[in-house]
Amino acid sequence: MEVLLKEFEKRNIKVVFQELNFWAGLLIFSENQKRWVCLVNSLNPPSKQRWTLAHELAHFLLHPNFRYIFTDGIFFCGLNDMEWQANRLAGEMLIPKNCLQDLETIGLSKDLTEIRKKILLKSQEIGIPFQALAWWLSERGMISFKRFQKLVSKTQNDSILSQGF
Picture 1 (tube, helix red, strand yellow):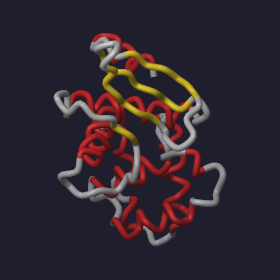
Picture 2 (cartoon, helix red, strand yellow):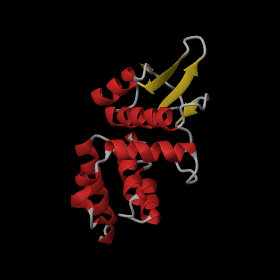
Picture 3 (spheres, rainbow, N blue to C red):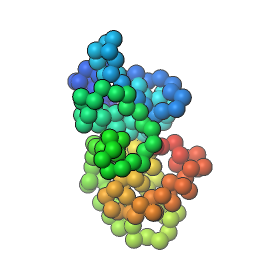
Picture 4 (tube, rainbow, N blue to C red):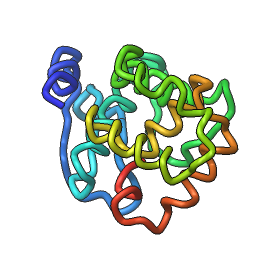
């Protein structure tokens, strides 16, 4: 998380950790301060906060002239959507290709429980939410989108796995 916080500092973006009722994070341009401010939900686990920071930094890098409030609203969007773009860049920042080598054949397994375990272990190892890694594996074609949906729907009520995205 320190690396991401330094990136915000380099760009003069103020980062504030506070309780947010509905969002994991926000990136807003403060007209009063004439600078960007990133709010991160302090109630979320560190892996979620780390993903949120990467996502909001991605908004800043990809959409610097779009003076708007970026929220983490509905995650799954169209290919040209700014939220999808920010998630994609967050994935590129936080999930190096070489760290997924042990998951290259994960899509061949028919055992959803085994797939869940492998993704959970890997997500904990690299410090990102389970749902983010499952989505990234789908984006990279390592698991099908249908399988991704099953993984996420099975984890909605699982307190360990639902701490992510």
